[in-house]
Length: 473
RNA sequence: GGCCCCAUCGUCUAGAGGCCUAGGACACUACCCUCUCAAGGUAGAGACACGGGUUCGAAUCCCGUUGGGGCUGCCA
Image 1: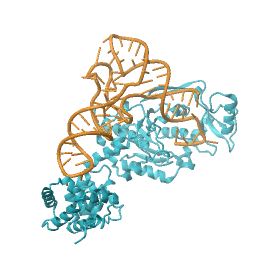
Image 2: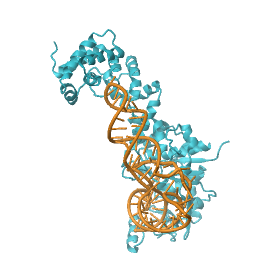
Image 3: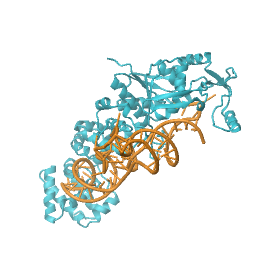
Image 4: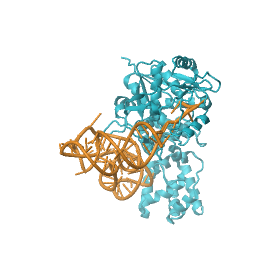
């Protein structure tokens, strides 16, 4: 049975698509999927001066990447002016709107003279002004009166009309302001459920008044979810905070991990549960359980989630997800041989990264013709311990004479050597690792050496020896 | 300033009056495991903002205070 529930996600393309928007979209999508209703995507681009097509594309690709699919749209408000014009005509005809040519300065000036609360004072309300090129259309708030917002999350919120200005609904250039366009579209698109961020709560009574003035009989359900905040507990802003969904994708986050983390910001399935599949989210998500207070977007925790999701990937999936990140390196050509080597080391890398982008750094030594050992590392690991020189030179000898250059044999031979000099393996592996990989940390050493191959291994041991000062005899 | 919203560990949260000496997760500390690093395991530290009510009983209900946030645009 097809439900009549219709939700919409209505971003404005004025900047990067940030995680707060992604979460709002996700919540809308979940209730639509759960009810078998429709998810409508609408681009709110009525402000020509601030919109850009690239942002629209960014929003679309980010939603697609996250797996948030839309059933209708994207509609663009810029293509629907006809509709707004009709609504405006009706509001004027029925005496619910009037033209006003007051400038901001004039309004502020009157506030100063009169004292009291700032805002528009209704100066033109009863003047029957004709439209001029400088005038904007204002909505006539019924006075006195009050409007109650029945919010699914916050309960009934009462707004006294005393505190509502006659707000502008059409700019002097003729384009509608967002509350108007919003309401007209929501009516036209038969949106039955409006779930959006809490910042919109104060404008909701204005929207309700418009709905009523335009003859809407049954108002949509409203639900205002808490905003996402930064470390200073301010609302996440695309200007101030770098939290673009696209950035996280490029850092090596998995969409599945991000969605799972995002859904938990303001909602919990209850109990100790945190990890869910999309299907489980659809089944469990419940607007009545959504929190009331703002949530901090904690990248650390999301990264942990990402690690968990990465480890759950199959070996092939992991390799494929890593490819775009490998391609950013000049040492990666994507040859069959390279792919083979990477596929072999991949499972060992998979359990060590929490971002896909970290993989490159862990395997680069296998593909670079030369590795660089920083002077810091050369000092601290190779030169500082007098044993290091001896180890490098002994190990070169041992590896040279190894009949089979496999991880197992390498491990055995190295262990026997450790016993012979009465030194624990963990001490011995350090200089070898630095000599071969240029790093103190990385995938298990002997598997790495096997994949590096005998020739490169011996060469790098010689180079390291020279670095320490062993004469090559 | 005005209007509105919110308030459990540092963070995200569980908690729908007795199940709470408040549970989980991230981060943090210690130990174990271990060829490094991770992962994993064990343990630890860490919260009901405050004050009044209501009730036999309150983290949970009410009021106030304090604190935080949002809105207050010819932005959305």
